[in-house]
Figure 1 (cartoon, one colour):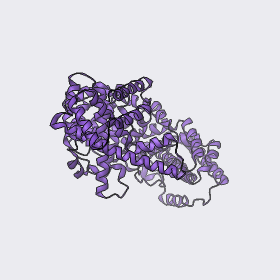
Figure 2 (cartoon, rainbow, N blue to C red):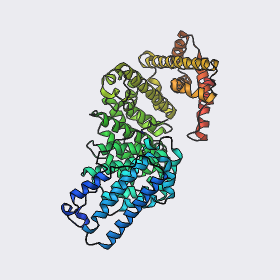
Figure 3 (cartoon, one colour):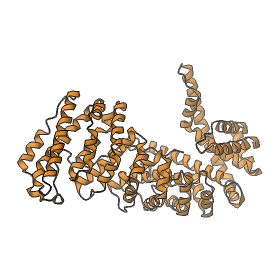
Figure 4 (spheres, rainbow, N blue to C red):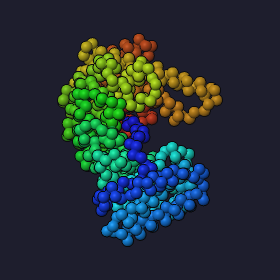
Length: 552
């Protein structure tokens, strides 16, 4: 199971990165008397005269000038500890040099030379500068240097820079600096956004940073606080995205957040939308991010238990019943919770979730949902699709999620009265759910067959594809959903219910198909079953599929 990848960049608030630092009363003097404004304007103008071509000579010149201004500032602060006005000019000069260093973002191939100059420690250490404005200048500089556009086609230089930054404790200092900032101040709010962007950029270049920043800092706790804010705001949206990025490929982070009551926090966040829709596209994206975080959290077994204990199953059912924007996401979260975790499946049946699940399976909620604004999924907002295509895309996505949910129920409830209640759903109303199941089987089977024929034609045209690539192409065309439908058919067949068996055989015959066609799909699924959940779980899964094949 996959969680959608949210690596979208967020535009930070424009805080005027080229503006000089605004000195604070907390630094020991009044801001109105700190700097001659005419002098400040001259310095501002001079900082805009950037060097057109950036080469090694320019780099060395910039580095030497920066180090000189840094030494001057340190000396002035030490000499005039009790008289801040005396070191105000040196601080403006230092700000100016940090702005000049931004030009290096245009020449990422020189990053190894920047690291070799031993300037990175000096830059990073300024994150703990007494003047928060200087620290925030550094954040803006790091944002520019690590921007994905700047690093395009420069993977190795980017890794050299990121390694140097991490070795010099940039993660700890970034989070430490962010903790002293206030969202109420526009400049500081911009610095918070920039800090999160830098962390996102670092993870993009070096994925191991995702775990490093959670091990070494209190970033996770800070993010959790932000997503618990009741009112929607930009920082909450970005915090939800960063959480999703940090958790997506890290079991350690998933477990760590679970131990911090993260499951409760995320459920609290999504519960706000159980009976209402997000009001803006940004709010929609934030809600999708929260569900991505929830699905990541539901991968470790211990977090599934926390989810059930926190009445997460009940909350998802309520969201489904309300048929609001989060409808499909609630189904996905339930599927993650119930995969390889029978207690969640049992709770779902016990709290009367079957009626809601099979309403979705039959498509009865589809019309209302397609008329709802929830069809505007965040992952297609930038593509100009007409309403019909959007509806079809949402319908397919919802179908696939519901199929997976029903398959998870069958896998998690193998015997007893709950199993009987699940199977009885396929008998009621003259086997209408068997009819629906076979409708899905035929549709996905046709799609997969068409893709297989297309791939065969490509091979005739001398385009070679190995077996793994061909299999992945078929998965993308709907093979996985077809396999799950076949697995559900296998569960039903093994119930030995004569009426359901007869209905399945009749519908297959009407399509000039037989049980052997279903068995072929099951065999392919058996042969390609992965071991993501461990070798023991793979063995159990294959044994179950083999049982279906034998029974049919």
